Length: 153
Image (cartoon, rainbow, N blue to C red; front, side, top):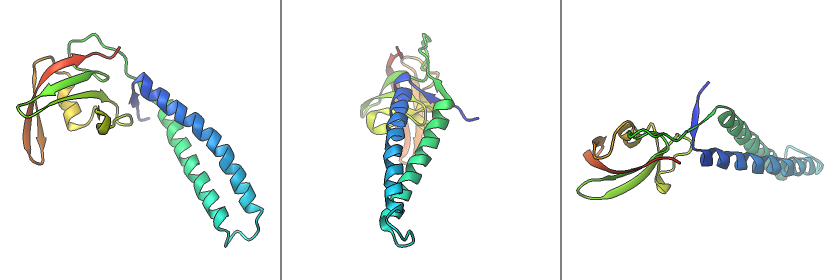
């Protein structure tokens, strides 16, 4: 079975989404029942829409239940090396960037959370303060220096 890595906050976010979807599902079932009562289902747009909505909710519920049941919480590490859950600041001659390394599902680059399997995440894992990391990109090779590591609390 596939493992899904989450910070505690990331797992809690999924659990809230699951609870919300369970409530939404109850409403969607009522909408579907109401639409069925309107008559001819073959030309009933309200019925098709309600059925589509319920199918989407059920699909997402299955995904969430699978992820939650196979979730592995990222635990704090006292290692001097970068591990999942750490927030890392890197710098090169052009810019300074700060990222938190999380699992695939929780990753959101627009919020500076990157996946442990992304090229940058992979390059940082296991490194220490002041180490150099290099990443191959379509525009060339980038080199960064690790300037700060904040451990997961």
